[in-house]
Length: 64
Image (cartoon, rainbow, N blue to C red):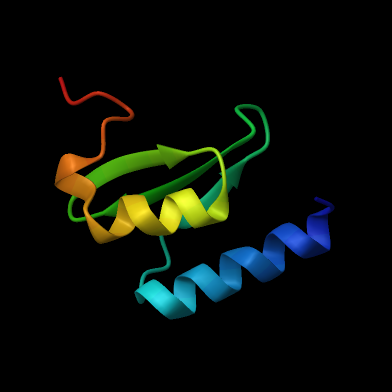
């Protein structure tokens, strides 16, 4: 994905989930969001959407 595609995906996810706290980690190469008061990480935008629908059950990153 190039920068423009990443920004388009971020905008779509933000609109769909109603939160500004979605980003792509350039160093981690992972998608991140703050959902349900919890930080979640995913390898793809689709997986991030699933994580945001059930953040309490999402296994990564582990809750300490």
